[in-house]
Length: 421
Image 1 (spheres, rainbow, N blue to C red):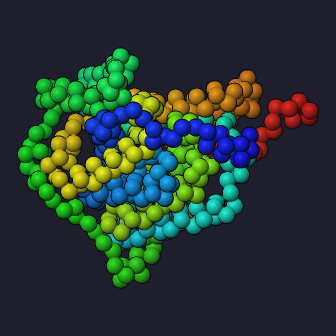
Image 2: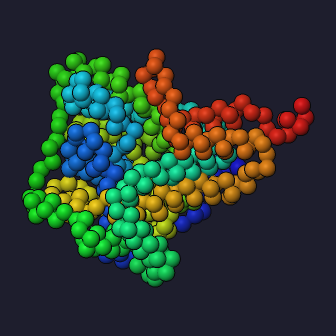
Image 3: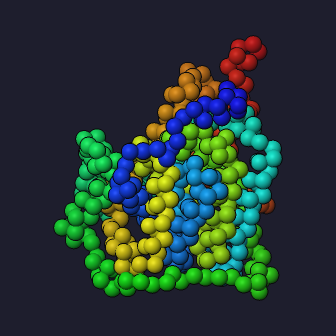
C-alpha cells in the first residue's frame, strides 16, 4: 500500500475527536489518564533530585505543546522519561542541576534537527527498515519490558495489588456505560480504600501539604552553559535511544487506535512535538518528556481515543502542580495500588504488538521470521546492555532490540531468496 492510499484511507476514517461522552464524562476520563501517568512522572524527579511539582508542570505544558504541533491528532500524554535517569544523576553530580538541564536542552534541539531531516527526506525508510516483523515484537517488548516495574510496585503488598487489578478487570469486562471506560480510575479508588483499611495509606502527606504552592523551578543562565558543556556529552547521546523508543511508541499508539500517525500528522511532527516539549521542560528544571505507555494502555482498555481528553488531562495536571494538597492526595496512593493497575496497562501494550503480527499475517513458520521475533523479544525484555564507549552511549532494552531487529531484517534473506539459492 503506497503512502497516497494510506493517507486516503486515513481521511475516510471518522475523527478521533468524535465520541458520545458528556463534559463530565470527558473530565472523569481525563482524571483517569492523570492517575495513569502520575506515579511514573513523579518517580523520575524523585530519583534524580528534581522537583516533582516541576515535573508535573512541564509534563502538562509539554503535552499541550505536543498536541499543538501534531494538530491535535495524536492522543498521547507526555511524562518524565526513564531513559534519562542515570545521565541526569551523573551530569548533576559533576556539573549541577543547571548542567544536566543544558544537556536536556540539547536533546530537544537534536530531536528538532532530526524532525526537519525527516520532513525533507520523508518516511519511506520505515517500510524498508521497520516492517511488521520488526515493529510487532518491538511493541511487545515495550509492554513486557515494563513488567519488572509492575512487579516492584506490587511487591510492597500483593493483596492490595491483586485486589486493585481484579477490580479494574471486573469493571472493564462487566461494567456498563461510563463505568466501563474508567476501569483504571475505579480500580485505583477501590484499591486506595482497601489499602487504607490495611494501614498502607500515610494520610499525613495530605495533612501537611499546603493548598497552594509554587513549584521549585530551576533556571539555567548563560554563565552555566560554558562551564557545563561536558554535561552535554553525558546526556545528549541518549537521544539515539529515545528516538528509537519514540518511534516504537508512536507505532504502538497508532496500532492501538487504528491510525497511521507516521504519515498523518507525520513522524516529523510527533518527533518535533516531543523535542520542543523536552526543551521547554529543561528551561524550567524538569526532566525530558516522552510519550507514555501507561496512557496507551488506558486507550487500549477504554476504546475512547479522543485527543481532547488527553489535553484536558494535561490541564488537570497543570492545576495539580500548583495545588499541593491535591497533588499530595495522589502521592499518598500506595505503590501496590498503582502496581495492580499497571499490570493490566503494560499487558495491554504487549497485546497491541501481538495484534500487529496477527493483523499483518506475519508467517511465524518461517525460520527467518522466528529468528527476528525471538531475538527482539529476548533482548528487549531482558534489558541486555551494550556499551559504545567512544560515543558514550549504552543501549539496552527496547532501543537495542529495535536496532538488532532492523539489522536482522536487512541482513537475513527473505524465504523465497533462500529457496532460490
